[in-house]
Length: 301
Image (cartoon, rainbow, N blue to C red; front, side, top):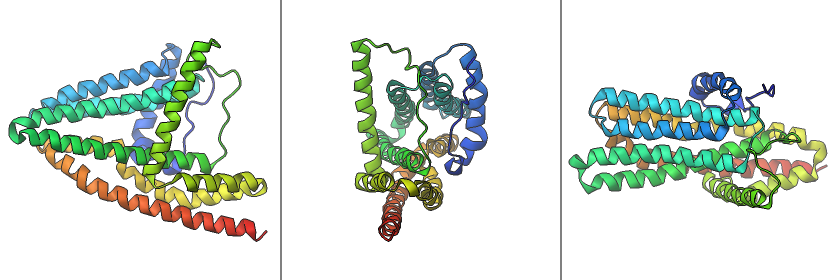
């Protein structure tokens, strides 16, 4: 059985329900999956199945037992979604395909739940239900992409990246040209998705380039620059967790439980979009101040 540490996270920016509930539960499952030789991609697909079943349950949200079942299935999806990445690191099977598949499964889960609720709301709201949910879904996509990009930026700049161990498996990929071609396709998809995420997050590409240039040209000060980045950005990144899928899961459940899912979608469109705008402006200003400070410090040496 593999002995590589399965969890490699940045606890200072973890949302508290992840830190104390979702990730501990996922960590308990990971050794079992590894022992049974279950692949990380299969775990991702199992999580997506829970999400699809949650959509079916929420379609019947008028019955509160179904609403409760939908919530439980969403929690199961969160746990499996946390387990797939840990399992990939434990078994050294990280791949671009896995990252793309993980993102697809996340979106399919929420699409299933949103579509189910729109269909359930249609008798009372008519076509407005579909319009409301479609706009909320678009806002959700923007907010989630920005949240994930902010976390990825933090992981990139707060500490030294951990190189992939030599001999790491790539989901069973071989050296055949067709396999290499598929890896290139998924690598491009992953890179494109990350670029879109960063633009939405307020961490514009030019800020990343400037910070990367400073790190490249100041090897003697890299540790202090990264420490300064952690001090400046960790509190801000924690605030972004209000846009995480965890809070959407709780919001969806409360909306269904109190027979008012439309209220959740309206809040997602208006309230969470306003939060995204505020956080994005703050992120850009934070980058500007931090870059000015470290560039001035480097120039004075």
